[in-house]
Length: 141
Image 1 (cartoon, rainbow, N blue to C red):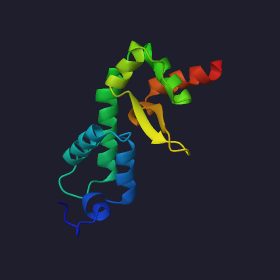
Image 2: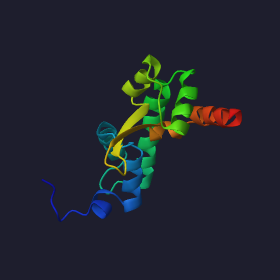
Image 3: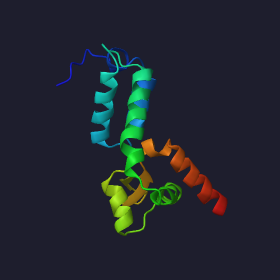
Image 4: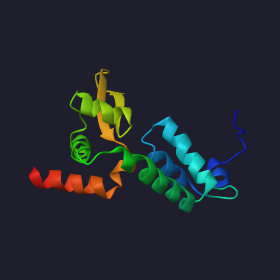
């Protein structure tokens, strides 16, 4: 149980923007939340975790995990997913899902029916390789 007297935005993080940025960069994936938190905590000697520590954790995860998980041919597929919020149901896209490069989200439409959509992991969006692939896709549309 968490002590209700702890203010997450002043005692754990230096402010709410730092906490929100860290959470946004996980894409809603709990494992990535834990990995980014652990990495950010290694950057500071004591609480609160500051923006610089979070940015370093994000950079380390982006460069050490996600950039290396994508093959050259896959950047264009990621740009396509980013634009369409959909995937082709084949082995290549399942592999991107398995490696958490593409994330699957589920929601309900206005009629209450389940809706499934996809997007790239937020850490991938910040890579130069992805931005180049996205620019290629946009210029070919």
